[in-house]
Image (cartoon, rainbow, N blue to C red; front, side):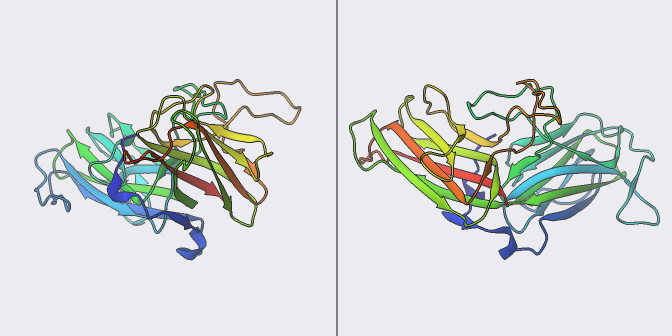
Length: 295
């Protein structure tokens, strides 16, 4: 995913219950093809196109999608009733955001709320198979934009979306000591309750490829929940789901390439450890981290 600095909340901890009494929220857009104005640019939508956005009260994950023709008697429902063509793109946060869900032919309407997800990474940064459905959703900071192209003018499309609101943590990791390539820093994220680390993002500024970032459960002795790479990395991590190999009721392990949702549990908080980084100088060496947490 691309970075969008306009939608990054300020540094700190956001708790979902400060913004909503519910962990899940529903949002809906109803769009007429070939009509309307882009609120971000003022441009009038042309033939076969339209778009609209929704916001959520705090960062979360888009976990389910439904779309089709609006139901005649129930404004919450959709029906498979005549969308002829067109492509749908749902973008993270803004009209300039990266596509997080795409459907090349909306005539195959989703009339049942359908789980969505994407490739995730395990604790050693290994990716799940791209063809495996990972039900953890798509991490977003402020909401989503829906864009439709190549559709038939005057047709109406209703898009329903379900989001799980998350505890969100954002901060800077800056090494104040150590030679370049050996700088270290630690951070403790005290939440005071148990939870599951569901997604993260990393943004590097002037850091070497040796930089090691490790997130552990609870303390320096806790199990590793995720790390950026086994040998270090300075490649930005866009908002990315986290998971791992799961077990069934008989203790049989799922395939390493299969997505399993969010089992990265902690008891009271998280511990972040950075090693082999560059120390802070006038070049502004730092790492901005973001965490999406279910608690």
